[in-house]
Image: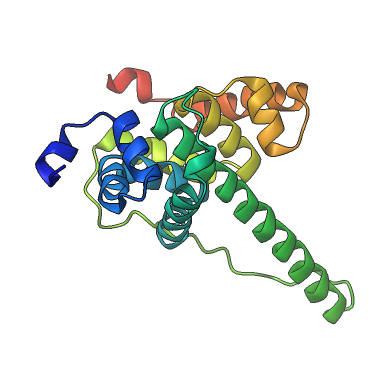
Length: 197
């Protein structure tokens, strides 16, 4: 099968070919879905470098685990779940590192909280986006990791509460609560959004 034929083949057909060792079929899947997978990683991590690294890791993992793909959901959905799990693991590691770094800093300063300069990094600076997208991205970036993660998984990935709870290692009630507060905080940060429509 030629490259042209691959570009018109459905995802399921490409997965079948890739399972039989056809790397070019998997490369076609990557070309089709890489932007979405990167976008999901970025919406969770809010960092371009982390999103790039995690999305690339997701593709490697997807290739390694291709035989485990059951086809119950679409290939893109399966890959999205892989990148979401990688991002959640990454965010948990970062949280643990920040906590231990802060504890060490507090011990070094005899328990006195140091004055740390508040710095904000805009990882999307320089990228052209619509004004609405810019406002929403900015607001998402100001949510806590837990609130942002729940909002992204529910609103953008259409994940059920129970699936989000399982992915995040918390109860369904906690997911619902976080989603409620995330929506409320987002609405408070974007008060003029409805008037701009």
